[in-house]
Length: 329
Image (tube, rainbow, N blue to C red; front, top):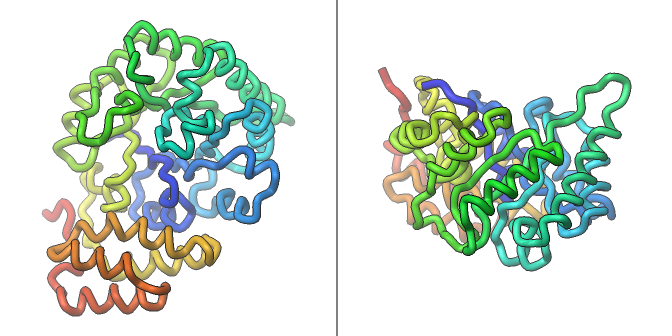
C-alpha cells in the first residue's frame, strides 16, 4: 500500500545516528530531526553542531525548532536556512512540562493568537529573506495538536486558517488535546476534517500508526491526508516504513543493534551516548521473546562496550530472535 512516510521529530531519538538506521531500510520520504532549541542554537551551545548533522537525509531533512521567543525563533531559522534540507517546522505540539512551561511547544496554541501569528510571520520572513540567487525557499510547516482542553472545532480551524494565512505550507496534526495521553485513541477523523477544510494545504496524520492494521485504519479514517508520520513505532521497528510498503525483508537484529551503537559514537557527543542508547533500546527490545529481560540489561549497561557485549550475549542465548522476516513470501 503506497503512502508518503515521515519520520517524526522525537527528542533523544530522531538524531543522525537513528536516521542512518531508518535510512538503511529505505521508504522514508522525510526525516524530521529532534527539535532544536532556538535559544541554544543562536547562542552556539556546545552540542548544537550535533543537532545540525545531516549526512544521509540531505534534501529530505526537515529542521524542527522550538522556543518561546519570536526573535530567537526567527534568528534560529536564519541559521537553518543556510543548511541543506527540505523545510522548517515549528513545534506547536509538545506538551512535555519542561517545554510547555517555558512558553514553547503547545503554548503557542494557547497564547494570544496575535502573538503566535507574529512569531510565525517573523519565521516566514526569515525563510523568504534567506532564499537568494533563485534558490527555492524552505517549506514552512507546523506540527500541532487539537489544542488545550477547551478545544472546539471552530477554534481549532480558525487557528489553522491563521497559520495558512501567514504562509504555513503544511500541517502535521496529532489529533489529541494537550492532556490526552497515548492511552486515549487518536481522533483521526479530525485529520480528515482538516484536510477537507483546507484542500490546498497538505495535512499529515500523526499518531497511533504502529503496524499494517493501524496503517490501513488510519488511511481509511483520513483518506485526504497527505502522508503518515510515525514516531515510537519506528524506534521499535526501524524498518516499519519498508514493511508498510510491502517490502520483503530479512533483518539481522544483532547487526542492526551493533550498527546503531557504531553510528551513535560517530554522530553524537560522548556525553549523549548513555541517554540515546537507552532511549533506543527501550523500544527496540520490545521485538524479542524475552524483551523485558533484554531491555533491563541494556538500560543498566555502564558503557557502549558493555552494551555491545550485552547485545551479543542476548542473541547467543536466544538465537531464534536474531533474524526477523518481514512480508515473507
